[in-house]
Length: 145
Image (tube, rainbow, N blue to C red; front, top):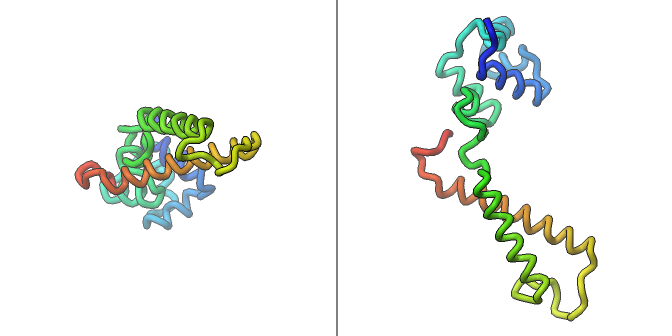
């Protein structure tokens, strides 16, 4: 029997954590032989096992089933990334023009390394803020937890 999307995702996630089939099986209460059958597609996963796998891997059940490429409901989308880049450009513009986000009170320019570190920090902060907002404000019916 050919491997399905679920089997492929389980294998990829397990290998990314450097777990053996035995180790993963122990985490969800299954034998190595059962894990082997699941991974080669000869045994279906029960709903409870699917939930346990999602919890162990920290992903959604929809991700495991191949219904989405987002591992979690709060993962950033292309639209989110575009929004972050737009906000970042505005902030960088403010830095350059001495606006409310200017680096210091004196008139001297910041060096290139400091500028790059500041931009990376701002970008990371925007990403974290966007993810936290999704976690906080996504209605429960749309969450996959």
